[in-house]
Image (cartoon, rainbow, N blue to C red; front, side):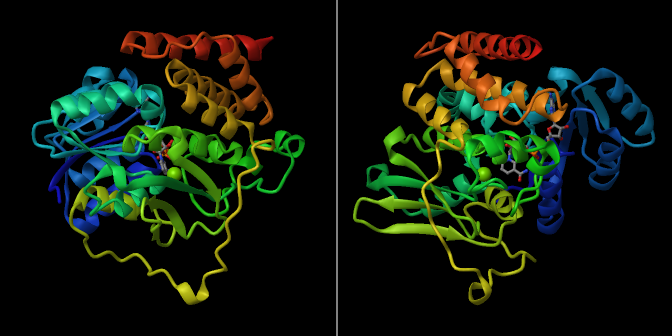
Length: 383
Ligand code: NAD
Ligand code: MG
């Protein structure tokens, strides 16, 4: 169990739930970071008294520094501030709860400082996962997944001493709000409809990714990176009830599943208390009142984002970066209601079509592919 953490992205859905866990477990928060919501950041700083608060943008950072002038809290800004928060000597662990590829630099700072990284941010693993995992090995950083499926897999793998015994990772997927619809029907759904997830309450970007099943596609690649699995060792099964958070099949035929109520505080808590399990106030899973547990294959025609992600996972290289960057840009346009839900897979597919894949990219080539894909999506959407 860790005693002190830095929390990157404290104002978001995972960030706020991480603070619940810190309160519950008496974990000290040495650094907080966010992009701009300084009202909430100020409240959090007053409640947790970190030594450092870093804000991504300058103006809100100056305003926050003015508001916190009565406390002994340093306010930093920009990438430097985020990197300092991620590598603070006092913090044993860093929770990466920033959304999107923007988490890459602070995550690398945490890895290079040899921290335990409680990894919520999936986009950096999709874009640059091989480099992040390689750096983690080099610097002795401990990567512990927070995404519920990957935490479930990590929990099922405890006690597995030989990775060769792992045969298949089975990611469960709720199916999202548009389960059972045809592609043309999904394409017409509004932002308000896409933001209604049946089982989980999350930030807007990931909720939209759940509606297109791109989230499961990103998680497919995330699973390969975290557990060094080949694409054929990862499968997706629709499990509407979100009671089983994912499973691992072993070579002897045993399948282990991790079950529980859908509450992200469990994987967050486990990432911070690992290898221990600590008591929580979470309501227990009531098996006798659970709906029947069902399993079905995903509909890859209705949800082309999942199919594209699986194809990119097989191809490897910068196409995973392009997939993620094009999706981030397209989802942002959908959030601003400038494109339809159906245009998200179209824009991602067009960005992939127009970009040559680089199989073993350097960090510079990854950053370049990321920038180009975002620009391509903006240009195509403007036509
Ligand atoms: P969110 O939108 O609620 O919060 C995002 C946080 O990141 C905020 O604190 C915001 O200030 C910060 N941020 C955004 N852009 C930034 C930038 N450019 N620089 C610095 N900080 C920035 O997102 P969320 O739902 O909490 O998700 C966070 C990450 O966790 C995502 O990668 C998501 O895929 C993953 N995740 C979330 C959940 C969930 O239940 N919400 C579950 C599994 C995985
Ligand atoms: Mg998940």
